[in-house]
Structures are given as C-alpha cells and as structure tokens.
Amino acid sequence: SRPVRIAPSLLAADFARLGEEARSVAAAGADWLHLDIMDGHFVPNISFGPVVVKALRPHLSIPFDVHLMIAPADSYLEAFAAAGADIISLHPEAGPHLHRSLQTIRALGRRAGVVLNPATPVSAVENVLDLCDLILVMSVNPGFGGQSFLTSQLGKIAALRRMIDAHVAAGGQPIDLEVDGGVTAETAPLCIDAGADVLIAGTAVFGKPDYAAAIRALRPKVLA
Ligand code: DX5
Ligand code: ZN
Image 1 (tube, protein in one colour):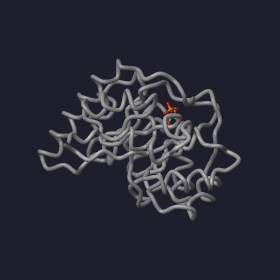
Image 2 (cartoon, rainbow, N blue to C red):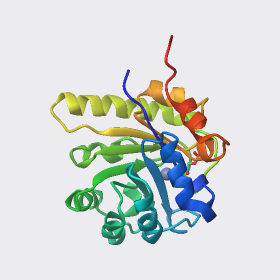
Image 3 (tube, rainbow, N blue to C red):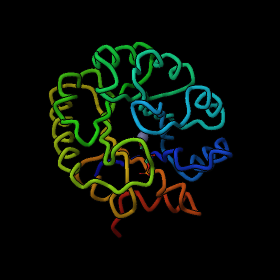
C-alpha cells in the first residue's frame, strides 16, 4: 500500500507556545507541518501570516505545507516562499488566474497545490494538473478546526486518485493527494481507502495529550 504522510495543523496548537508546539509534533513523528493562513475575508476567521511562518522556520526541518485561505492570494506568494514555505496551496476561488498563480509558485522554487472546497468540483483542477504538485481536498468548509468530516467528499478523493494515477501513467509528474478537515483515527482509514497520500489533522493531534500516539493512530494499521 502507498505510504501515508501525516501533517498536523498548527491551527489547533497553543498559540502562546507556537515554536514549542511545532517542535513537539516534529519530534513526535509528523511528516509535514500544515500552516493555515486565514484573512477574515476569504474565510470567516483570521489566523497568522508570513511573519509567523518565518519565525517558526528555524525551529524544525520538516516541510512547511502552507494552506492559503486568503484572497487575493497572488500578492502574498513571494512573502510565503521567502518565509520558508515548501508547499504553497491556494483555492481556485482566491484569484482570477489559477494557472498563473501555480506558475508563480513554481517559479519561486516551491511546490504548488490546489485546494478544493466541499462545493468545488474536481473539474476545477483538471486543466492545470501539469502545474500541480499537490491537490488538497477540504473535508470541511475552511475557516475553523474541530468540525465534522464530510463523508460526501470521499467520492471526490477517489475521483482525484483515478485522475492522478492516469496523469502519472501518461508520463505526468507525481501529485500528492491531501485531505484536510475532521480527520481523526475514525475517518483517516476512509481517506486512505479512497486514495489519500497525506492527512492533515489539527484537533486530532494537538487536542491529545500524547502527540506521538495521536499521529500513530492516524497512520494505516499494519496487519500482523
Ligand atoms: C480548516 C483548516 C484545517 C484545520 C483542520 O480551515 O484548513 O487545516 O486546521 O482542523 P481539524 O483537523 O481540527 O478539522
Ligand atoms: Zn488547512
């Protein structure tokens, strides 16, 4: 079976101790750190910006997976690249020219991702697959942690799995398939069965006393 990576979302961490929290999940086995950027306009919540990403960068070495929930996003791509983002993902609704935004992220030397809201169809990404390093399926409406997983999105994950596999079989570059929102030890297997490669989890990691055990609980169960 395909390796699954876990990306804890810092949104559920103790914001008074961000550096320590980020280091703790990295030490606990997190593969990537997911950083949720919210502007109070594209989504009804405000989180943090490039200054905070930059301040965290020297504290850990795992990839920074930056999820932009801001509009317009284009004017901030350079700032997030400079702050130390390894992956920069944005929503098709966050600007008029998704293709150009992805080109910009690639030109900045970063991996580019497209995020699909629950109501956004798979077709929103199919004509820019050649510029995608990652596709992120939102399994909640973006803006807040701690919401319930929308099982209605499992079909979309499976459809994207087929689309990515066909793209790679035709000689295209690899594309990671990531799921964000309501991922818990109960819903993680559903995502993995549908074809996800990377699972983001906020409250299911930072809401638990033992981060290593929480991350382990999200990984595929190894049959004895
Ligand atoms: C929601 C964010 C998610 C959020 C997930 O807008 O994109 O990354 O932190 O939180 P949980 O895992 O608690 O649903
Ligand atoms: Zn996110």
